[in-house]
Image 1 (tube, rainbow, N blue to C red):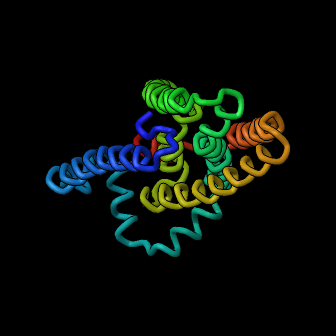
Image 2 (cartoon, rainbow, N blue to C red):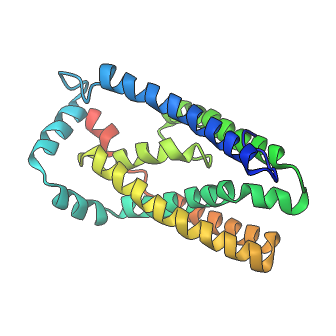
Length: 226
């Protein structure tokens, strides 16, 4: 929506410059707020579970924590289900412009609006998921709502491991899956057409959903509060 499709490269340059200036302004504001107002932790643990986790974090090494995470069946299932489901989202979002223009030439702005709608509905679903989890503690997912819920679920499954380690590994795995699925979708889209590419992504979502169902609802952090 900000960067026009134009034969004049100067128009594209102005659009890109405006877009990146807007992004830079927002991220700089967030950085300033973090530097001046964000605290890593409250002076006293807010719950028994957090007290135990803080004590455990001070004693543990990163390598031992990683080893335990990778031998945690529920967490490994979450790694794969989260990686596959979010990778499909990344693939569709990355190649959205090509998908739209294949059938609707000259509708770049509509592709941008569709992408914006995906993000906004994801933000809404994240809030809805939070309300559902607060009431039920059952980890059921929307797709973009899965982004924050996945990190929360990882913290529950791996408690009392450091949350930063579990979340960091989860984020690293999803980047690998995201690159792989984007390349796969692009290959299928260019060589076999959008229908078969979309079918492949649906199969991926099916596998991701099956893996999600297999994850035990082992809410260790919640149980530690009881």
